[in-house]
Length: 255
Length: 329
Image (cartoon, rainbow over all chains, first blue to last red; front, side, top):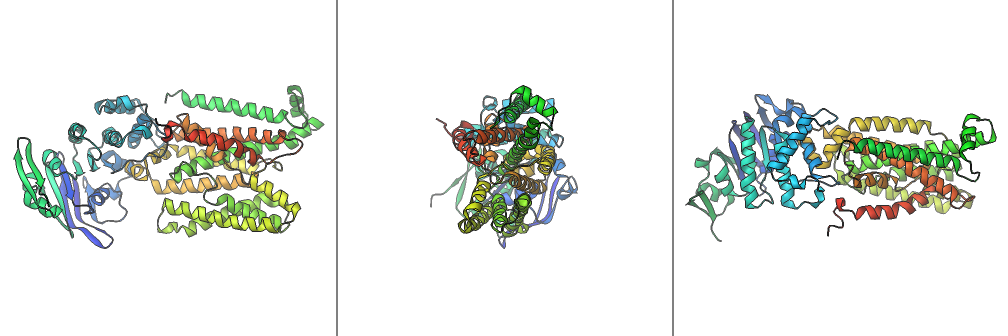
């Protein structure tokens, strides 16, 4: 159980979320929606224990995440940043192997299990053919696929993903999101992701948290939260909802 | 990489270092063959023995140690500043050392204390950069980098000032020092101990260093304590640079060329990269220094001229390689 208790986030004197009480139970898939600069990324950073000072408490299994040793936390929580860095020459498989760090000793000796995990995930995400390539040779989308593979390789049950569908085309969105969700569920955790695409949230999430601005938020099951009215209010733009054969679809009106 | 490649790299580099050292022992204004070297090594009191023990061994060990220090400093600095083109001199450490050393020369202080002055200058520059970059407010790589560059430029002005004011006689030793020179080097006991210490610490932390390749945020998310690691990288890089400058003055390019050559051979893993850089830096500087002794003998040219002469084309070549995103076509 991941619990946020009375969390307040602000940036530059502007309040992003006030008194956020948020309980995330295992097996859930949460979509984090909000306008640009609403604080989606900050909230994910805070939940991953990567934001220096926060008001309020974040507990994982009843223990404040600040009290976890860094490696222990990294075995429980995986965090995916919006952009991936690779300023130095490194090959794809070696880069992926770094995701095993929380499971290794301080010196980072790779075990046979690490090797198996990396090769398995690279195959599962159709990246095996890229294993020997340099990171600098990958396109933005390929890099994002590798980053998501990294989350799977890390094998942490709780996944915090900042815009996991960045740079991904539809095929890989539909392929990778279910894999991530299945992996987090299998390990007894939950997946929380910030998304720009309401329709992806409608399709994959069980719950949504909308950050409406000025500290106000709305959280709950998708059926209650994802309505045309809420979405219009969220983006300050009229949005209509349609029932399609593949589920509810939101379409913005042309201004 | 296959597990074999680590030992293979070390073996190759060790052999290269041994050959370079053997060459450096034999070559010079008085050329020695194997027999003479062997004899000289066992008879330190003979004239050959004196030449080997008093002149060539201190100098080649100084070159090896200085090269190792610069290469290690370069590798650490590049990781710290997330900039593949960072070299040991980039944060103004060498410039601070040069300024203080030149001040001492200009004031006519004894050259015997030059190593201490330059070390003090390097240390002063580190403190200055830390204060001016206001690291207590938070570590900002860009701010530290730019502050270092600006501080280096400031010391550069001071250096030019001393050069303009100095007599011809002093100017010569100043210029040699600025370009990097090992001709007055003595047995590098303290720097060697410093290098061993820094290298052992660096190797112990090398596993965590690897994670920094994915950026600081990703490293933290994977459980690396980035803050203390960053301090280690900074202090170790500056410490190594200060020691290197105290031996050989302002030697450029070793700190860039050694780590980058290895990276392009596919060595990304700092557990291999850091010690291997040290070895390669040592090899390169021993070769460069011996060449500097021989090239225009009996005139000795500062070894810094040679490291630049080799370093520039090599670095340009390396930057065109695929791993750096160059030559993608």
